[in-house]
Length: 318
Image (cartoon, rainbow, N blue to C red; front, side, top):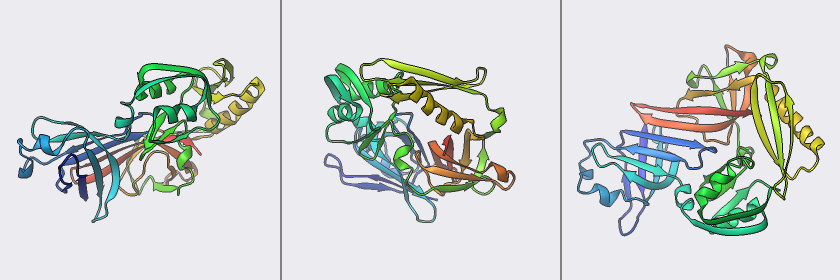
């Protein structure tokens, strides 16, 4: 195992590299808006005595976290220092680029605006990758912040989650922006340390799906299919003006969710390193008929106690 923490030059401080680390955690998901990380330094690193900590680890300073095996470093997190513990051991708390973006002030008003245009307006100097064809109608955010706008978009009726991909703001795409990347293979008996996966056969799945189409004027067209007494989902569509078309889209999503498969999470070793948005191919020798292709919804990683682990939460089946 090896780790490298890089603190780029910042406000007169030269670039620093730290290779001695006690523990690292990272948390990433398209649903949590801001990716987070913590770094715990060993107690016996004399260089970081209590007189130097605040000078070295400054709030708002950039940080890059890499770790892996046998001299192979994988960049697992890039962002900014948001907090440093007052005691020993030193614990550094970090957030990704969203930390800077979500603090920006917002004062906008539109009679009719697309999602892309709204985000480009409130997030200047950032590239934006928004779900195509989404028209929000009239919106007004006075004396607000980017954080409050993105939180509003994530709730009903929009259900548009946002996250950062490097310096790019992604909204409403969920898994779609990474679906062209290579699929990652995981064998449950070889790559997984443990799992909390549940497998359900198609005949055991009872579900009801409600579809809501949000129109330009703010009104909604609603439809639902399925059976009561089981799982319930709500899906949001945009500018679908005919209920029959909403039902058609619902039927397609219903059939996908009705397929048997895994849900839940499993814990794997540190390689191959994955992130949310990728596709993972799950295979098993014990249950060969349960192999399947899934999106990754969230990944929590730990580097400590002489091991690297990835807790991988599955999203929908492909």
